[in-house]
Structure formats: structure tokens, C-alpha cells
Image (cartoon, one colour):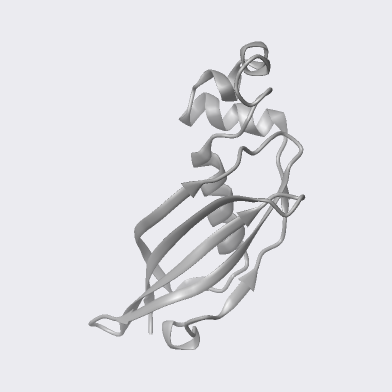
Length: 141
């Protein structure tokens, strides 16, 4: 969709993705090598009682689910900012995540483009919100 086709208040829902312990540990091993993501024994005795996904992994999955819906398509040019990032609840192996995406702002730019801002709210299979953040992109008008 082009910038002009989005409306403030518009809401979209993504498909779901189930996280495995292997996926959590693989991501963390490369991008967030902390014990609560990698060391099962230590994590079992920690605050979360087990391995949890990195917040950065949760953010990446949330964005992936949104992008895979195809609304940006070939019209997106680049991401411009992330604001109000909140990691609300831990994400565990076996959790199934999906996102609700709401258009919250539109600003026209020069050269037939605009800045579109959406709020990604990501939920687990218990419908508990685990992540929220505002993401802006430069997109063709």
C-alpha cells in the first residue's frame, strides 16, 4: 500500500509464529548472549524460571510478522525511527506470538513520500501483551 492508502486509526492483525527454545537460543547466541537466553540451568533458578527470548528477538519477530502481511510491499523505502519500545512480559519457548498493528501518524515529506508511524502490540497465545513499540517508515505516496 502507498502512504495515501493508509488512514490514522486503521488496524491490522498479523498471523502467529510459535517460538522454539532452539530459535530463542540461536538468536541469543548471535545477538544477545546473556544467561537468561542461553544457560538453561542458570535461567531455571533465575527470575523468570526458565529460558526466555531476548527482547530484541521479540521486537524482530513483531516487525517480521507485520512486514510479512505485505502492506508495505515495494512502496516502503526505509525505516526511520523506533520510539516507546516496551518489553512488557517475558516470552518463553512454546509461546505463539501475533501482533496488532495500528496506524497512529502520517506526515507527508518531499519527493512524493511520507512518514508512516504504526504501533506494534504483540501478544502471546494467552492474549497477554508482551511487547509494544512505535515504528516509522519512509514510504511512497
